[in-house]
Length: 368
Ligand code: UD1
Ligand code: UDP
Image (cartoon, rainbow, N blue to C red; front, side):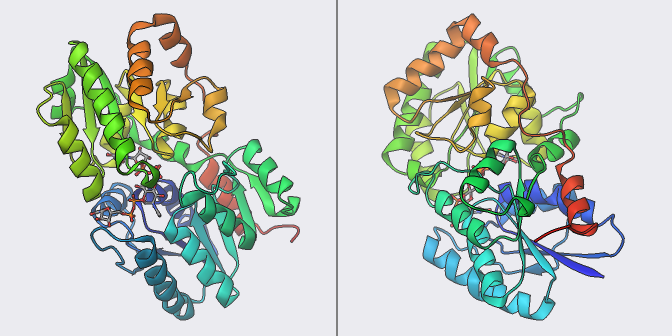
């Protein structure tokens, strides 16, 4: 019996790992173990409930306003104990969070093989996104199995000297999740509020946008919302107190912008599917939007997801207030631009990524 442990801690990791957990649980000859670090608490629970995944281990590391030091040291120490007790044959981590980095490091110290799901994304600017670019490059150094979502991600890994036999292009498990969530008959009170208007979804939480950049973004959104009576903006705010404070400061009292609590993943995907466009600094949403055919203005200076830019759905616009204002307004007024960006494209796979990863792990590998 092969013991495979999946470790994750934040909302986006959970959304992309739960489909794999559920796929592995259907396989014979595998014992599937789930360890959550609890880097997120409520936002993680929303996803576990949606996919009906119950963790075997929970490190419960989250504290309000946690620093990178807090998360790194608690995850490293907590994973040591879990790994020593469970002794998995392989540990799967996802993407680029501090949970991912510290868990992979713990495995490396204990000599346990690591599989990296969503491997090979790069900006090659270690400060953007921060600290995620460092995290994923560091995991790349120790990973034995690299599950690259796209050929471009594979090429990054090859250029860095990873062995070709250690890399598989699988598609992104984000698309697996999306295949199960969007339904025709979805209703929600906040969707009713936006009925008859063009619904814009806003999300922003990135560490490098804390402070002035968030204020720039919110001021630009407010200016546009106040100018366009047929636009309604819904912003499910991340639970980080710093982000919530900035949003409240800039957006309170604006009738056409509604600040709401984080949505569960089923609701959020259905909101995206019914939106006119999206403004975000999120990583995962950049993968989901192209397959839904929703134009995205990416509130960052760089992206590690150039496939969506190439497909025409994403525009990376940065965080300057006047630029965000101008680009947002352009998508509301320039029909040709809107139509060009809203053609459904899907560079991130066919929804079978979890199956492929499970096959590779259970049917054995031929090399490395
Ligand atoms: C983390 C990841 C980031 C990922 C993001 C997804 C790192 C360094 N950052 O950033 O890569 O894009 O998650 O959302 O790994 N909080 C709650 N409840 C929750 C979740 C968060 O109250 O369920 C609050 C807490 O006060 C917490 C704070 O948010 O201290 C920040 O959480 P943290 O995980 O440190 O950073 P994120 O910005 O969420
Ligand atoms: N998401 C969600 N509820 C929300 C906002 C986002 O379920 O209220 C989902 C979204 O569909 C995507 C993921 O959360 O799959 C993105 O998470 P986040 O923006 O927190 O992190 P990132 O992708 O930037 O790492």
